[in-house]
Length: 169
Image 1 (cartoon, rainbow, N blue to C red):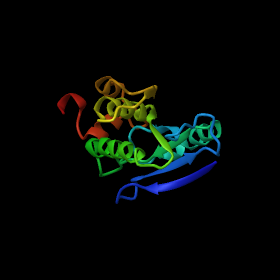
Image 2 (cartoon, rainbow, N blue to C red):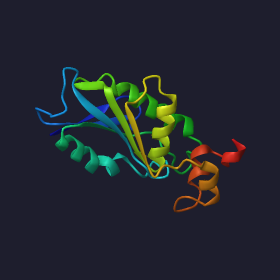
Image 3 (spheres, rainbow, N blue to C red):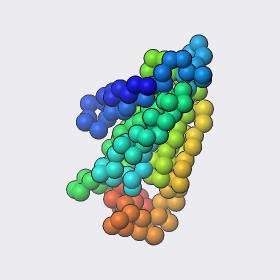
């Protein structure tokens, strides 16, 4: 099982780790192996990274399925209101997955957790090339409710990511 870091954009956070299964994969066909794009959670904060999903990527590759563990633009102190950049990064990473050698794009999937689950659902709804399957683990689907509940350590994750209260956007 190998892991290759691939830069898919000019910004330092625009990369993904590709976890490829050892040959032969029981799921391989003439087009390649299925691949699951992993989208980490962490309140859309830049402090939380794709390292959260590394163990899942390793396990998937060991089972014979490729994993595309992406990083994306998150918000940090003084850099709020980045939601469009975040979604753009996720969409671009999904597009890059289709260019990877040895991947059967007809069996490409998305798995996101928490804020990553929210991004997975948004990607599945907006992507031109639809995923074969989308799994959203504990997704944040109600931004107004999450804001009212003061989601995150400081209670301001939704407002910081959007740049305002969700009902004002």
